[in-house]
Image (cartoon, rainbow, N blue to C red; front, top):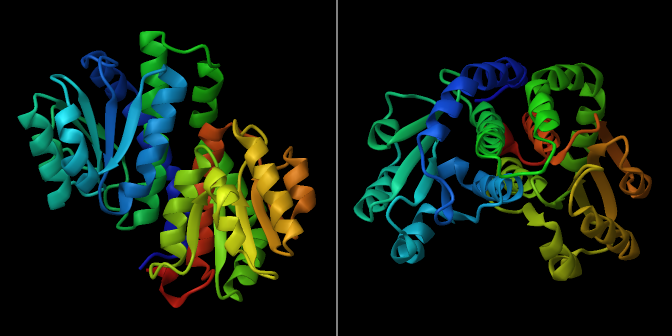
Length: 337
């Protein structure tokens, strides 16, 4: 059972992951031939919702095509597209589940290069792969720490690859510095935003259902948190363009949507259009965004204001604070499990 005390351990675990992983990640990245074909990113179990984050990060920061796949979809549809030396990154916290091991077996059978993102170098997954990106959440015994460390590690891996292989014009130094300082931002947020987070959690707890909406790197965050808030599926995590294209028509007057975003979101315009539509249909709008995202904040009935960060840092911070809200009992009795 997760508790708020365990959530407060996340900054330390994240600091260990980023500091200890930096040199290891660089060494592994240098030893792999990247970019010759799409990179496949397969999340297994509770790690599945984070797969799109890896794809977004590699495409944005390195300019390489990347595909997010579940283990089942990878086996059913992607096998014939695999080329020799294609990179397949498999994400699994424990590294012991059958689907992650089957994904590696399939990748090897086609001559692909399986890599793991997991917490233990001694896990069956790590031993089956040609290289391992380690997170340092071993012993945390909670999926919140694993998810935060995995999302931050994906960002670090993509940033390191872009820097080493000179494949990006993005301000990599600033993004890497932001990532390094994330544990500080988390500690500040736990101190300064605790009451605001609890207040929003209380408001959402009273609702029969609500929508979680995010774009870009915030979409994998809301997809994961929809499951955390409501394992039975009453709450949905929707990508902003999908919400605008169809799901918003199901929003009834008085129902609520929680938008998770930031002022530096590359697809921010879609979120703004969604927010206006929610208001136009008589919905209740809540938001978690940064202090510079004035249009979204001004439309919101209630907003939790975060430090102004890029999508890279902002998405990891938002995930951490939403995990805090989940164990504060945002909607259903099962959210603390």
